[in-house]
Length: 224
Image (cartoon, rainbow, N blue to C red; front, side, top):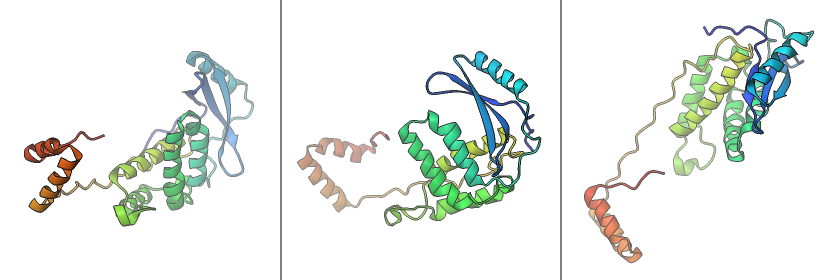
């Protein structure tokens, strides 16, 4: 079991604008979500000093035990909107939002954060690999690629790590999960008539010599 952090540590991170921000949990709202206060500074040491001063001056501190009943969906939204999104580029934001709101939340979002188990998450990953594709399943198959499942795992694992850091759960249940193995692509062997058609088309396109070299030596184009 992961060691529980002592209440009152807070957290420091570098903002997009170059300033350091410190966050400290001061309590929990009616939904069980953490309420935080923050401080800003130009340097990390200055921010750490301000955070320490904030802890000392606050009259009310966070309770020793996290408030039960926080749903994973609510925590994921708070974690993404409050901790991740401000420092992400638009394209990266889209990736996070797709993973959270299209995959994780519909499947696991209604489970309480402190009730989420390794088995719940493992079953979720298996289902994604087997039949998790939401669009164009007729072209690419019903299951998601290994890389997509891995990205979803990375996002969920990071959110749960932050929940451990904020004393909302004692350990990260995704630590012991194993991702479904990636299936190697089957090699397609061209028939002689297919090779002939390719060479005829390549001659018309002006790349006959290049294609002939690849076919005869087994060279592959670089992967982007």
